[in-house]
Image 1 (cartoon, rainbow, N blue to C red):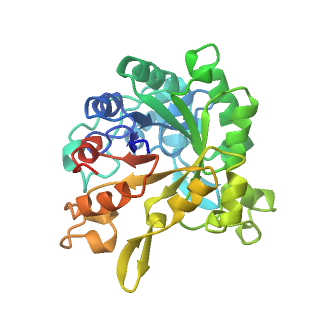
Image 2 (cartoon, rainbow, N blue to C red):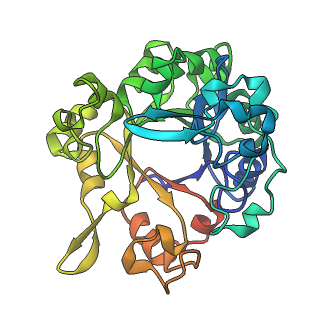
Length: 329
């Protein structure tokens, strides 16, 4: 069995603001195998490395008086959001922004780096990956939403890698919570590995939209897509699944146990990845929290070793060095 690969979640985002050059280069230095950039698009079709298309959580845009008039409210994947959206700005405007820590109360040391880094384009990140040797696991964010406003992420990604070794590289993986976006990438000739992201609950946005008016009640849920029959069908369409880590735990007889999903996925020909491993109490299973403070580190080694025993293809972690410090397994 191949050892579990370490994917730095938005870079070494436990130590530096996510999706910054600092976080990506630090991830490489701390032993990550790959970096996960989330991709959204500007008004003029530039792929930007941000987790959300709403920018106020991770940049200083709310302080930019010259962009105050861009604040608005819209509904994305059924959720109403108010803020500043990347698709309303040109790359030249986004390039003036500075990155901030998303979780300053939990990660004050990282927050000290606020303002030091700018915003990366996907092309910038690919250059850094080439210089550091990191593989890239790129997530297409809100693909249906972007397509609806004339910014198809599959086409923009294909354009970004065209003419480069990334277009057919084993070092590139594309993932999405919307399976249709993955196939659109493949149809454009990109030879990346395809990974379907699955939350513990809810329904994929593209499936809900396909059933009319975004009605989730008539579309299969992520849980229903994890039955043996559904996994077998997925195994004919994608290379792996990546699930919320809560899916890999089961509670039987009052104790926390590992679920059988990895074994069932393997039987369907699928690799399994999981997200996101973090040491803070806020993100650990209740059984592994120590004390009441959300920012305190709990029994993260206990939880991570349970996951390490499952034979996962890869784990997404905010602190790549912590995974490397686990005992031999």
